Amino acid sequence: MSRAGDSVAVPAAAGDLDESQAQLGWAARERRRPIIQAAARRTLRRRRLAGKLVQALCVLCAAIGLAPLVALVYYTADRGLPGISLSFLTNAPVPEGVPGGGISTAIAGSAEIVGLALVMAIPVGLLAALFLHERRGRLAAGIRFGADMLTGVPSIVIGIFAYALLVRPLHHFSDLAASFALAVLMLPIMIRADEEAMRTVAMDLWEAGVALGARRSRVARSVVLRGALPGLVTGNLLAVSRGVGETAPLLFTVAAPSFAMTLLIYTDGTQPFPSDQQTAWATALVLLMFVLILSGLARVVAWRLTRRAR
Amino acid sequence: MTEDPDAPASEPAGASDGARSARYSSTRTPASVALEAARASQPPAPDSEPAVTLESLKVSFGGHVAVRNVTLELPARQVTALVGPSGCGKTTVLRAINRLHDHTGGRVEGTVRLGDIDVYAPDTDPELVRARVGMVFQRPNPFPTMSILDNVTSGLRFNGVRNRALLREAAEAALRHAALWDIVKDRLNQTALRLSGGQQQRLCIARALAIEPDVLLMDEPCSALDPVATAKIEDLIAHLATEVTIVLVTHNMFQAARVSDNAAVFLLDEDRVGELVEVGPTVEIFDSPRHERTKQYVTGHVG
Image (cartoon, rainbow over all chains, first blue to last red; front, side):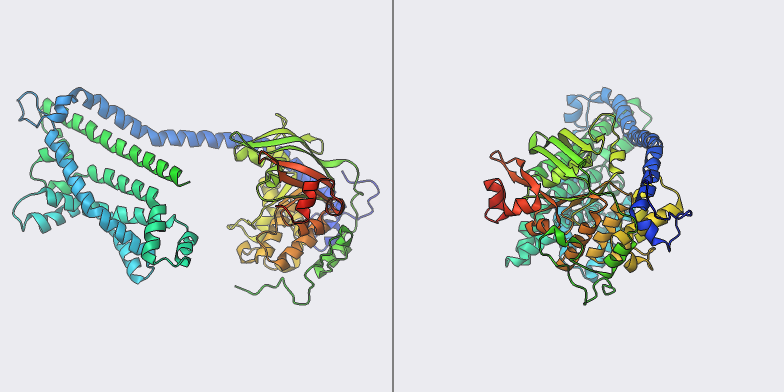
């Protein structure tokens, strides 16, 4: 596409870097342009194909990631659903061989243990996260590191810890000890989730609040916590669904298996009797549904809160 | 941070006397002198064929119309400024030219022609359109993970150019065009993030130029820059316009007056939808606007 009448000496070897004159001129542009656009056209088909391939791969991997969840829900529902009835949810457990019976004590027990654990963990987690957010010192870094370490502690160790602290000295198992164990388990998750949520509130909003003469505590309440609310709710709800499903901390703390759903699944599931196994499957389904609903609820709440904020 | 080697104290910060005639004499930076000396061959004189044509363009987002009734011809190798207050659709129109609304959920109606290409025709590849159009954004956005050289050659490499000699040659030419070569030639393999804001923006201009585009879209390229860096970019725009068609979005009336050949004034109509009110040579728009609303806007009474 070189224009007729161009008297410029176009270098034979492209990339002769000293010949900046020839590179800069219009003729050089006219020389490069068709090469570049031809390359673009040539690669377009390959890029299209590669794009389609990668897209297919992504869909496939997403499906692979989703498959265990679907299979899990399906299998649990398949095995558990025959055992579910209204009386199953409302009746107390009965010994093996006695017809009827349900898991009402286990549902109530789980709810009580988790509820009490939340009362303990949420305020502590929130205030600890606020501290980490507001103060960036060595102490904050230490606490953050500690929280990360605590996340990695095996839940059975936390169970033994609660046993040594609250069961042995008091000489009896208790829901309080179980709640304490779950609170310890959920606390680091909550702290990090809360801190992340607070960090999404932009620094300039914080500065705007402080610049208005507000005290730090007021800004923390009206700007930081208010802005972080969707994230706080989501993070804590997810921590709850994590806590509900824990079994190990309860092994050492709850008085009897029939006072917590996860323990009931564990003990009944390992019995040789078909009726006990049926109970275990049905309980597993109830627990699974509870966790799924909780996760869904976390989504919905977060979505609605963000939407209202706009 | 190293001190800015880009700002010798003796350098004039770009005269700004309004008229386009001052384009070549306004600033004689060493780089621009070298550039002019280097321009051994001249592009053809601006011809009558427009580089970009917009016909009855309308862009809407989810039922909300952002801008409509835009019919506009952008003359080849001239600077056309899209001016107007915030929210009247200047940037929306700009992004319609290289089909960026494909990715933001915007619905484009009407016709956009780029030379002989119908940009929104069903068989037109948006990638090929964009390979002929460069774009510079409000904030300098060099790729943070790439070196200076890789930034400049990225557009070429994305489009399948492998020839190292060609990459190198195009990069140098683009950096020279962006008046950046002498500053970065000894640190081409360093990160682009150590450059000053104005230098980063010029790097982005070089990146856009390296693909040898027909049209350069500039979306308020100076809004994040200080006056000195702004003057350099404006000087650059004037020089580049001899070879590339430039579309410049700006809400700075003085900038439009300083660097553009033509101006298109956008304002909100009674439905609060952006519309094109008046278009013409910049001098006429500013000295003798035909519409009362244009007059009010350019004289600073409205907007």
